[in-house]
Image (cartoon, rainbow, N blue to C red; front, side, top):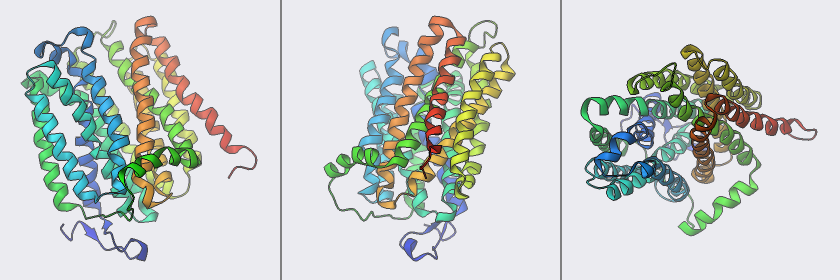
Length: 404
């Protein structure tokens, strides 16, 4: 690794691991965005992929569902390995597996091969959640929130840009090119990260079974983890519901947008990622509690704007931006809080945190299609507002007499 990428920490407790530099933070942010995008590339392409691999329309949703299931399994089974195995080697090995899964998807001749590849794409794309704790390990305490926020801004950009990017690539070169190009990108990042990341060997020596058995105990016995997970689950459910439901609205009258038009609309939400480094600096200054309330309130307000703006592209864009900023702010606040609980459990806590709120996101996506089919945009907005409002009610209990 180049000496321009890192500098030695002056703090004795961090002397064993180099302190992260700005260029390395930027590289990790980009890597996170490109890796996490793998989970979302297929979502707008289902109508193209299904006929090509002889997948029936009734089973076409499995393309998305299996990728999400794979990611959830990876969060529980693979991400905690960051507390057990050398981190750099773990990341590069996982990315190599992602390459194989993407190549299999690109050349899949049948539905069964493609669906298996979809599951493996989700499973191995959890490499992104191995990188975020590693960045936190390298960050000095006073700057940890800012570093995590910057890296997470790349992750959110990847989530928001994946769908429009895959739509545009497929429109020009076909859907198989999306997976082929992503495989090439994963090869590049596996090589780059293998060369530029420092080694990190966890102090733990317990086995894999004990590691997994500790996940439930961490959630049950760690009030901070419980709260941060609950807040982010509420917001991420509303986030997934909005970005699943709004394309259905935009494809309907009076908008009647094409796939390309919907892709361009989705690009507008990418600006929400810019708030992440700011959220990190807020957390570093000790303002996590008030900022959490603001983030949850922004989530609820966004659906009020979305309800009023049912016929307005401009108001729908504003609603998406408000929601994205609230979700990203709360995610960074939550990670900053749980990463401060101890380096020895950081990867496992991150895995639990992500796995639970990702489940909330899957529930939000499922509810969006059902609600829109039953009643149009209005029930989508009411359900979307209900999630962060429930989070706010739970947040209010932080101010009970006697609580810290």
